[in-house]
Amino acid sequence: MRGGAFYDYHPLVNFIFFALVIVCAMFFLHPLALAVGLVCSFTYSWYLGGKKTLRFNLLYLLPLMLFAALLNPAFNHRGVTILRYFPNGNPLTLESICFGLGAALMLATVICWFICYNSVMSSDKFIYLFGRLIPGLSLILSMVLRFVPRFCFQVRQIADGQKALGRDIGAGGLLCRLKNGVKIVSALVSISLEEAIDTADSMKSRGYGLPDRTAFAIFKWQLRDSIVLAAMVLLGLYILIGALCGEFAYDYFPYMPTVQYDFYACSVWAAYFALCVLPLIIELLEERKWRAIQLKI
Image (cartoon, rainbow, N blue to C red; front, side, top):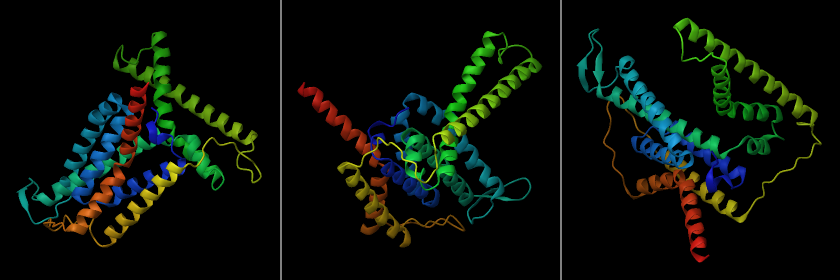
């Protein structure tokens, strides 16, 4: 899954954007901030991954959100608006339900942003940015970030090979399926360890991490990178000032207050929305430019 037009921007621009939106998604628990972050991250991940990512979001993220939203009221009984009492005598409050829903939205937003991150920030980009500063850690992180998609691909390959040998994990009794599953996991662990050792030996033989080592990079800073970076910095500073002024603060307990928005608050929210939707704007402008070029041909 390639990251579209935003993928072609400089790695520093990509990394700063995802660092900003992920940090904002984790610390801004205001209902409007959660809604903006979820809509933008969900739409962008859908744009990058198509039906496959949409299916993942609906089949896995939605049940995860429901589970997180229902789990919090079972253990959190704070709040003044009591809806009913559990059989053990603990109250079920409206504030605990809303807080659980907010935590579920935050979790889904962060996951969606990381899905987009894995599509846009490839391992070579990460190593390009941090290879000289933290060579060992950057290599480990790049391997970890690509582990999940690589892990899923290898599982399918091993399962297909085992199926061709008559060891289908979906056939036979429970004990037979369990034995076939253990064989798949054993083969997967062996392959993963061998690839990790091969990668470490390969990078060591290339002099990775040495102080005088030179490296070839295909990434060049362009004017568009300066424009987008300046826009992100300005939006980020404006959002930070708004956060320090309390525009993103929201307390669910002991009761949920009524929020009023003035002109400054609306401008802060507009800046946050503009930051989250920035890659989609870049993608749409790029598509519009290509359509105009095709019409001229």
